[in-house]
Image (cartoon, rainbow, N blue to C red):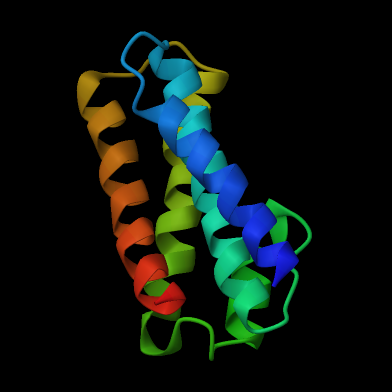
Length: 120
C-alpha cells in the first residue's frame, strides 16, 4: 500500500501543477503526463504490480488486464496519445495550439476518471 500512496502523492502534486494557470503550458502538459503516469502506477500498485517506467505502461497494462478490465486499451491508448503525440509538441516542438493543450487536458481527465474508478 505504501507504493500506492507514494504514487498518489506524486499524482496530486503534478496534477496541482498542471492546473496552475501561472505555469507555462509546456510545464502544465508535462505535469499532466507525469500525473497520469503516477495515477496509472497507483492503480497497478493496488494489484501489487509496479510498472517501473512510462515506456512500459502499454505492455504492463496488457499483461495485467485486470487492473482496468475492459477499459485497458482506452487507458493505455490515451496515455500513449498524450506521451507520444501531444506532449512532444510542448516539450520539444514549437508548433502547438490551444486545441493541443485542451486535448492534453481531455486525455488526462479521461485517464483520471477511469483510474479513480479503479482506486475506489
